[in-house]
Amino acid sequence: MIKLCLSSLSLSNFRNYKYSRIEVDSRPVVLIGRNGVGKTNILEAISFLVPGRGLRRSKISEIDNISGNSPWAIAAEICGISGEASIGTGRISEGEGVEKRIVKIDGKIARSQNELAKIFSIIWLTPQMDNLFIEGGTARRKFIDRLVFSFDPEHASRVNAYDNAMRERNRLLAGERLDKIWLNALESKMAEFGVAIAVARQNAVDLLNSASAASQNSFPKSYISLSGEVENLLAAGSALQCEDGFKQLLANNRPQDAAAGRSLVGIHRTSIEVLHVDKNIQVEFCSTGEQKALLVSIILAQSRVGATRHEIIPVLLLDEVTTHLDSVKRSELFKELEDLGTQAWLTGTDREIFDDFDRQIIDVGMLKNS
Image 1: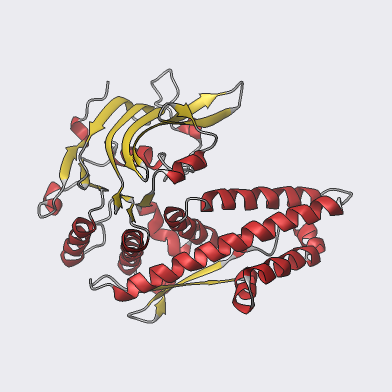
Image 2 (image 1 turned 120 degrees about the vertical axis):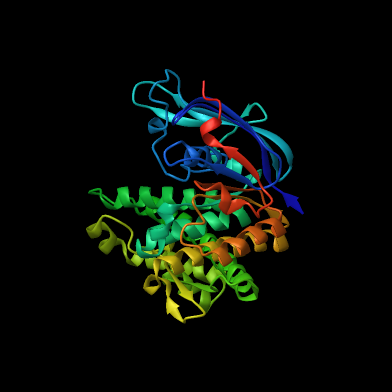
């Protein structure tokens, strides 16, 4: 069993931190402080230790400390999938108006952010995600894909490759002359990567549903289902047959896609439904508290799957997770985090809530910030 964790985190010109350093052990970490002191900023910094735009999905130029004169940077010592490693990441400027994020692993520049997925895994839950189930399909797909990343490090690369091929296809369809040979090649790529993405999503969802059904805690049980053209093709035949069918769908839909200015079929439009099993109702009809409890239930199920099926326990970032949870569910959450052995990072304003939790407390207001 591989337990992922941080041992240190250094922030430079990141949000409200000019410079600060945190050192911890592998137990859960609770960040305590008043609202606005910078608790979520620490979680956001940690979220940049995996591919993507972080838990706030901000532009990299928006993260710099407003009083600093240097780009933001993060350094961390971790226990990762392959052992101990050093990760450095931050913003660099490549000429006027051109900025990007650079990643270093053990002092060497990584070819892409996706290299991070091979050595570290993080799952997060934030208050902004409380509206996940009423925001529409895009937010749900991103949430499921984030869970899949922790099971399958190559998933991020496949999603990026699919999106790039789709954007190029849309560009070609918007032109006056169609390059059918290039369109065929792009649609072949979309089919290849799209089917692989659909298979990975379905495998992950099957594992999550099984873990949720087997849970012994009082959190509501969830059942996640995926539907769409690609999923229907997968259900009717093999992955190879699905690829051929998806390519044909794309070819047949060129006129409609050209008129719409976007691809109208594909895994980027997969519908994701979540059922509150105990009440037999769709999650969007649940109360705010029930939706929050369902999200926590899914995150815990994902952690159990990671531990039992993949022998990897990811780091969890749980921002204000105790909001909307009663005392029973809070106690069950803390016990499950202890039983799993995960290094969860939680935030809160009330220290007493965490008194019965085997954790380390960091008073964010007392952190050195110089």
